[in-house]
Length: 87
Image (cartoon, rainbow, N blue to C red; front, side, top):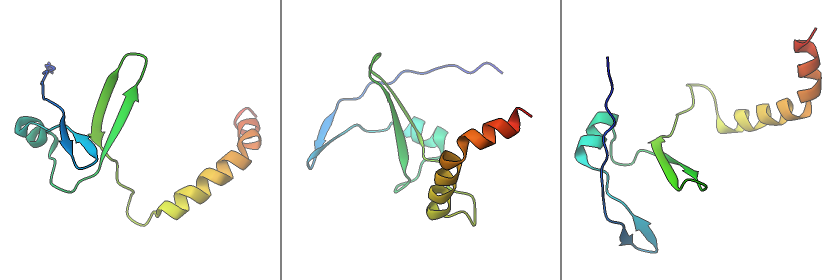
């Protein structure tokens, strides 16, 4: 299957104290977007590129607190874990 990239153009508008850009219906439908869903913006400053994607949800039973704790453990034991990998 060959996937074709499409390019869209929209004007930036004022929305309260923020700026906004509308998402075309064709894009929203293709991505399965619904009102209220969270999106992530990935910005490449050097090329002035912006990627917009759905924010990945956490698996059932995994809380943000658990991920924060896990990140701390992995940071604290990074060296030991790398040494185990190389055995």
